[in-house]
Image 1 (cartoon, rainbow, N blue to C red):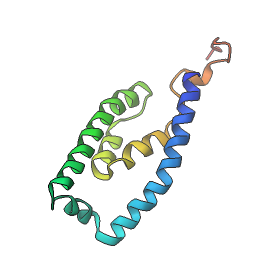
Image 2: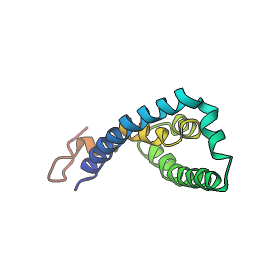
Image 3: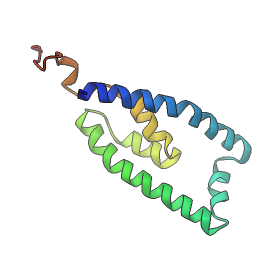
Image 4: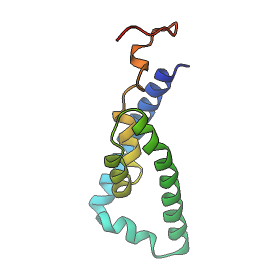
Length: 116
């Protein structure tokens, strides 16, 4: 599978996940508010563990996202901010709005590159 095909597959997966997760997030915020989502987690060790797990996972995602954005000519800081404020929605939006990696847009199926 080519790098461009992998990006398209990631983009499709991100969109498929983004739509229902956005709906769930909007529903949760409407029910308990933005702060209420965090407040719910602080009442038990199980909530602390879930929150800590989310923070660790998002830090790991950001260690991939920042260099990937730079490599593809995208400013990583809006995506870092979105991740810090919106959790998983930030990386999902990054993947859903991404384009093919630089250079792959000019690649022919046989691997030759057309002149710019």
